[in-house]
Amino acid sequence: MNSNTIAKGIVKAVAIILAIVLALYALYLIRSVIAYILIAAVVSLIGRPIVIFLEQRLKFKKTIAAVLTMAILLGFVLGLVSLFIPLVIKQSENLALLDINKLEQNVSTLYNEALNYFNLRNIDLSESFKESGLLSKVNIAVIPELLNGFISGLGSFSVGLFSVLFISFFFLKDSKLFENGLLTFVPDSKTIGTRTSILKIKGLLSRYFNGLLLQITILFIIYTVVLLIFGINNAVVIAFLCALLNLIPYVGPIISAILLVLLSMSSNLGENFQEVILPTTIKVFIGFIIAQLVDNFFSQPFIFSKSVKSHPLEIFLIIIIGGLLFGILGMIIAVPSYTALKVVLKEFLSDYTVVQKLTRNVE
Image 1 (spheres, rainbow, N blue to C red):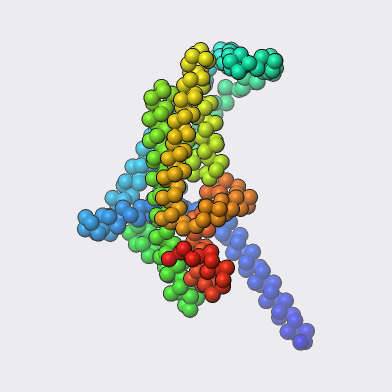
Image 2: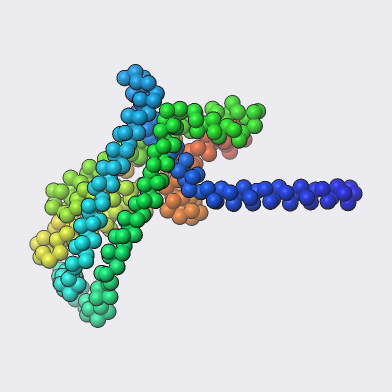
């Protein structure tokens, strides 16, 4: 090997590394667009059963079916926005008029009643809380600024929403558009296998995301009924937030439980602890447990058996690994990502024993 060959090899290696770096940098610059495309792909998977129903059962044309599906999904999003914006504005106004001294007195009273009820009088945290003056340090004046920031952020949200809806429409109208886009980066020799994998992934993930939608809906209904029965303020919004938090595996239900307990107690702030606050909170918590039992013994087995087709321990380990690598986002996307990976492995590496064992339930 002469020096000329070595020099060419070095130049080629440097060129490849430089090309990879530039490609990664380009992807970083257009990360928002990539996010829009991925979100639109998820939206199209959720809307796919609706389009199929409108096309095959009601005999609508693809364009009309896609338009109606987008109208349904958009109506759902607008309903959520219309639900939260008035609440945020109202709560901001309430905070701006908040009497800190009265709030501190109510919290202190609630705390003392809780200590007396549970016989924890030796723990004198109440005085420390008063001396710290934490509530008096809360700057209520920043609330209007936060509200302005929230409203200005709606502009960016609107751009993102329009982009996602626009892309989603074409994904729904032409179900092979996303598929063909991916195939442009695949060698001709791998086209058939890749197309087969994409079709399987679309079917599995469509069932998975619609299963999650069913899961959230069931929890939302149960939480709403429970909170309305016991007169908790903003019951619908709290129920939706707690149901949505359930998308975070393992951690989400814990956060939901804490949120429900705290908001149930704060909803009755100023009432007698033993006669009103504690019984109401316990009843709400029992309702939460019932909702979780329904979720764990009905919703989740249905979702995982129909789409993921993996052992519960396998799912647990994948979620933990996803959380360690990418945090909460990793926990959320771990299951669908792993499902897609299993399909690809079975299609291209099915000769390996470990792949055969991992993908034996994947059709």
